[in-house]
Length: 332
Image 1 (cartoon, rainbow, N blue to C red):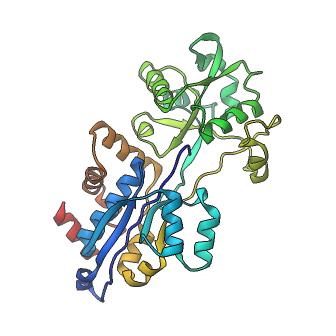
Image 2 (image 1 turned 135 degrees about the vertical axis):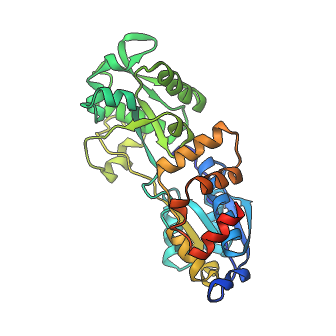
Image 3 (image 1 turned 90 degrees about the vertical axis):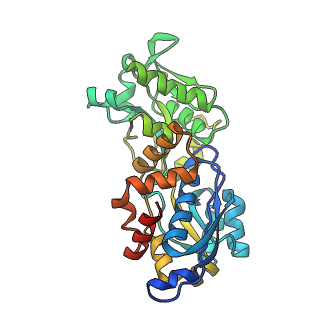
């Protein structure tokens, strides 16, 4: 994704045995990152640990690199609910191999996804369009706003990794020969605005985006398939290198978003809390819808967590013990 910086962290104190043990949970630090999905997940963990397991969880500010590095080197903070492990693979591997980190649930069960998307109403009207190649056969369905005789692929702003990859894939899939223009939308707001404008007018649109995001919770989009398997060597050699002249078609790998637990916390948390952290996972669709609600209502992470808990008992109740579930419901 573009500028992912942070990871969340939380810790819980000792749990004795049986249902009454939760009262001894103790202090917990949760590092909250500066994007919505991480913010609301940190708030969700805080609420569930405090109300369901008797913890005293506190949210702190965290960033991916310093937070995970600190967990490996200092054993604190206690937990990173949304750890983008592919952004720091060597540090995470070292932490896991050395027993300094414990990997819990894959927080985003279907992975963070990037790629080229089209509106669902276009996909429904044209079921033959499933891949990037399919879309590039139809410039008339995705007109360039400056030149209706051509199609347009909308890219992100300069400086994003996804922008570089999209430009390279545009070359690899023969976008120019297919009579398409690659459009620089200039900013995140410009990219979002191009999707919103197309959606509200029910016009064609194709371009770069990612999930989880609030925008995809508001505007239903379909990710195009790449038509080829992922080639890691080619991805590193050329798909991610702006000046590489000969990119090949390639799939876009998913980012692994995993909950990381500092070893000292994992040893004192107790089986019930660790069982929760090993089960707590949601999908892009769930997070997209939640973030769209938060954006529309100018809601904080705490507001979003409570809204999720009220609306999705069938999901979260499977993460926690029956006793914890009753306490959480009573606290809402």
